Image: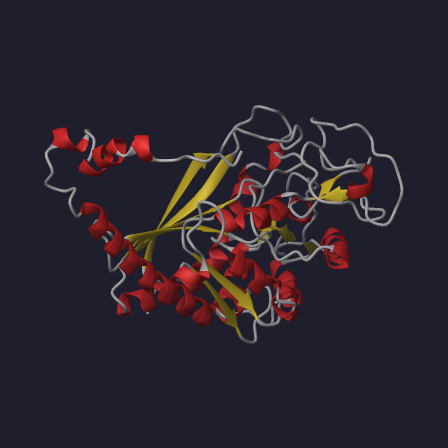
Length: 385
């Protein structure tokens, strides 16, 4: 059976906001996004109410690694009455096909929207950063690179690994390796990673060499285990340091910390999928995060209202969608089925008493409003400010 999607490729301009001054080589170059649109062959005429999926890839992973997941998810949803209109995923501007297209315009100070990550902080992050910085990234041929990768990605689904062999590497020369090697006749070209190790690693941390502290924190509260005075706040270079500094810490990334603080206020439904071998899952951090999600001001209500779910996939670690494709598709598909039904019920609830009402009445006070206004003189309003 062939791949069940029609693939349509797009190239568009990314957002112009840079956040950090050296995010790009020049301040005003419009970076490009390489996007793939997957339209199901069994739904070439989508209808209102069909589901559109907008996906985001993991750092260092080409967007194509998720194609086996889309394949299994389509099969699951088709059996359960959920029609997928299309799936859209882009390589972020400094990675994969987008990174190749933008390679002559990339900087070394990247901005990331607040997001939840696997990073557990402390020594684990230090080791990960060092490992990413020093890893090998040039091979004499694609065949040798693939052979070396088999052991590294041995837990991956074979379909995912096949995509890695196609999209995880690129031929030399490149912008950072410009020299053209002298090749023997008919010899294959040497290759490097499609996403450079530099751009991948810089997604994990940001420099704070002078140890600036979070704005508003005292020196005592901002330093863990050491006594020192902090430099003045620098709104240009380090505007968003968040959390206390560990002894010797000279780097940070605020986005995942901010996201963790904001999860109580998430209103859409959320599905968390963890690998049972993930250190944060074993430590209970993922479960704690799931229990907090949606429970604050403006939130969905969270788990008590069946708006948040946490699924743990056995025998999987950090890269669940690459390791356990079928289990991931099953968890997502089941959740989608329930959410589509919830959406239909909500649409019916919104339409009840509204559809068919004259346009003039839709823009006027409802009857309940007038009743409440009539009772205003008897209401006692207590301020808690």
